[in-house]
Image (tube, rainbow, N blue to C red; front, side):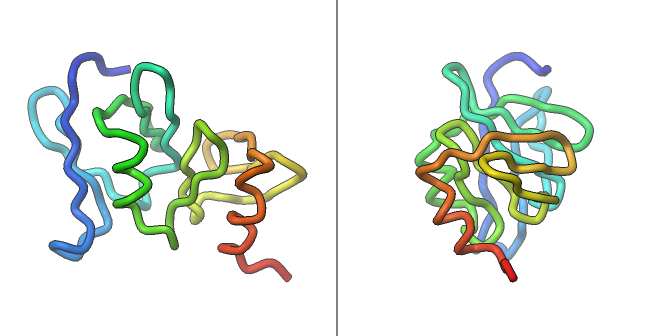
Length: 119
């Protein structure tokens, strides 16, 4: 895991890109939404989970929730914002994703289900 202070820029809407730019190891690196599995909120940082690695970014939960597109990302638990494109299955209160299984909070279940195409 990378250490240190990381600044984050979200580039949604203004330049019509589906990505964030996070300062990692001294330079801003682009992270495409399709590469993000989920964001995990911890007491110390917000962690970005990608297929290759997990790393912290300096951004508030409120900013993430306000800026990320709700048709792609949804809060599924008090500690997780998940990329809906990465959900493979749901069973009870567990989300199965490409990169691991996550808990789904009962307070977030109905809202999440409303964004999925359930038959």
